[in-house]
Length: 434
View 1 (cartoon, rainbow, N blue to C red):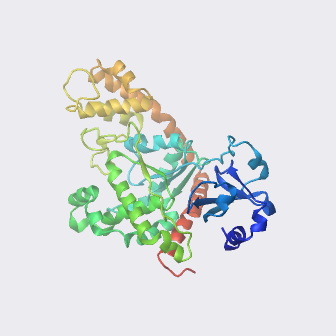
View 2 (spheres, rainbow, N blue to C red; view 1 turned 60 degrees about the horizontal axis):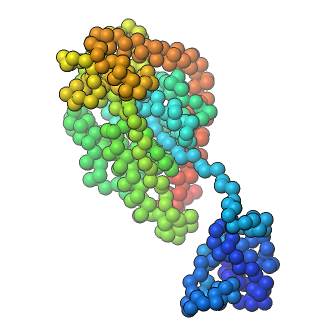
View 3 (tube, helix red, strand yellow; view 1 turned 120 degrees about the vertical axis):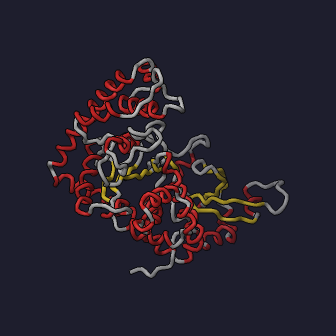
């Protein structure tokens, strides 16, 4: 509230004689409706210095008054009964961001663990799905293939059912704010936080110190940038990625404490938090699809054997061969919950997600099958499910102009939001802006 209005209320007794004090039905708080401004209520919190006896409207006017805020409400709303409420404004959809690397072929694990779930999420949330090409260079890669793989991954998003009219689809490197924000966040991220990342330890051990670049250590900061730029509410993650999301949350809270609030406001900003602290969105099933050759290892693009995964674009005969040769066990029947049968659980879970059946329905159908019968059933279900995706993919790739326009439009929408967040952080960190 302005100083002038507060002085007007406290030091103009003749006018206050005509003020009416009542409970505002719109704001559900005690309010003064000034005669000179009958369509505006001024909402106050009052602390009585003395006895409350006789504290009606006049008693309250004599109290010490602390202004909270000034709100507009119409006289018609004020005249309505105290039981009526103002119509609620439509709530903003929560925002979800996620992406897949364009390294190797998109496989069944990427699809069931991420992309398939995105199709449902785009109807419930404001969604941003991007191809994380900057993450693809943390380990040695084939440079001439990167752009081809990026386009292919984008086409797979669309072929799987991501709708560009509902979701923003774009390439990570096409939004420059990702790299700039990463650098800003790096200055506030302790090296000890990065050293404890499990995936860094595993990948660096496999590759050897001489083949490991700094990017493999710092890419979790880029992942934090990917998420925080868009003020994300929810992030779909597999169980093995929760550590990275927790790091993102810690970085957000640290930067908010270091540069947000009053510190930011003193530099001309709006104050408050610079970043929203996101939550994990873990799908109930299919969040982690395991290797066809080892039920204890995640299905991965980096696994040396192509036999370990079903690629979304694998032709029919290749799928038949991979399922026929996949690792099983010698136990009788099929079951989900036996810890000694990780391969059995994995294959049943794949079948459950592909068919859309419940766990109980799968158990009822398959518990007495032998492996030969079940492998045929699973193979048929996979081919039937993937064939329309493969056909749609070929159609999209035959029209490069359409794909370019989808990515251009998606990057434009993403940049509008990302640039606002980036500029706020630059301001809060004290940079001289152009």
